[in-house]
Length: 182
Image 1: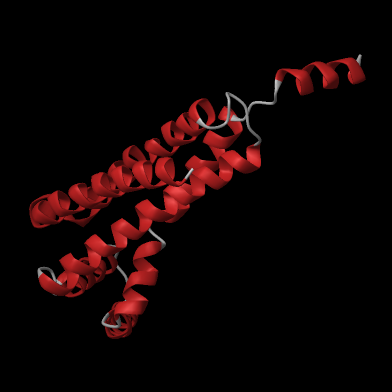
Image 2: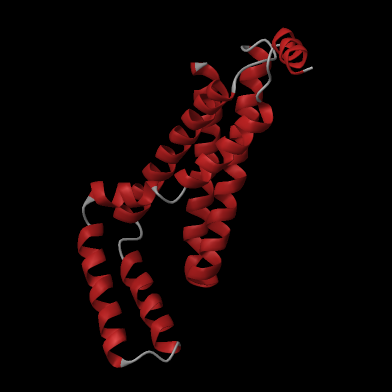
């Protein structure tokens, strides 16, 4: 199990890391909104490896059958490894190359509030909120925790779907359950 989980988790993580580096290189040109769409699309594509990792485990180590719980365990471990790779990539990018990211993002958020016709008080409140966020974001542990929450829920959903699709009972169990029901 370790080999399959590591292989698929690291490949998924490498894809996310690569796409993050590419997206961040162009985020000033494409904007934050499109950058977010590109980013989450890349995360979903990279997490498709969860499905293939679970299937590989089932076919190569599970003898063609396994439970939802085992499938979920394999998938969630792949998601954890890939999400940690994502966090590592962001920590490298943020603290070495894009330390002004929060300032640019804050300006974008304030501009959205301003464009919506909000009052001066609401704009000021948004500015204060972004200032507090920037202070907290300077802490690498807080930064890592916030960053982890971006890809991991997507990985969890894909794991649940993949585990439900790929679970397979042994033929004897299937026959017994049909006999008991009939």
